[in-house]
Amino acid sequence: MEVFFSLALGVLATCGIYLLLRARTFSVILGLTLLSHAVNLFLFGMGRLTTGAPAIIGLGTESADPLPQALVLTAIVIGFAMTAFVVVLALKAAVELRNDHVDGESPNEDRP
Image 1 (tube, helix red, strand yellow):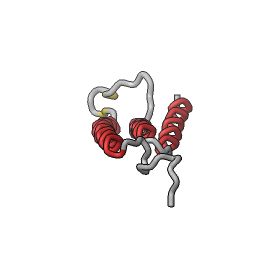
Image 2 (cartoon, rainbow, N blue to C red):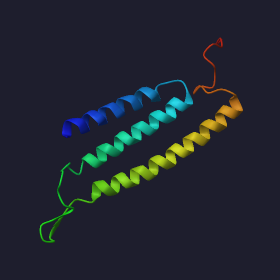
Image 3 (cartoon, helix red, strand yellow):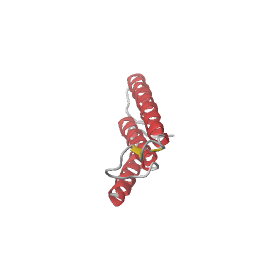
Image 4 (cartoon, rainbow, N blue to C red):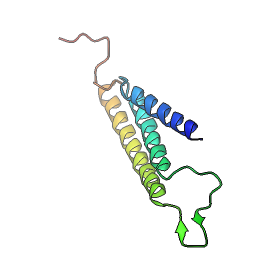
């Protein structure tokens, strides 16, 4: 289980960073989303992965650590707000510049 978890985390982070380095705004938005999912998985993994374990251990004195779950919930909300803001920003830039490139210029224009 841990190998699959770490492999999924590595693939999400690698694909997110690769897409962040692309020249199109949609690729950058998708890369930010994948990178935020990788961070969510990392934060969730901090709470130790166990299968079949109850949330409350024992007869009431010991309980599972709720901090990683709270961090993941907060990260999901922040990631959604960030994605919505970047989508609106990219749409506004695409309408004003009539272009989808991050630097605002098309790749076949000659630079001075």
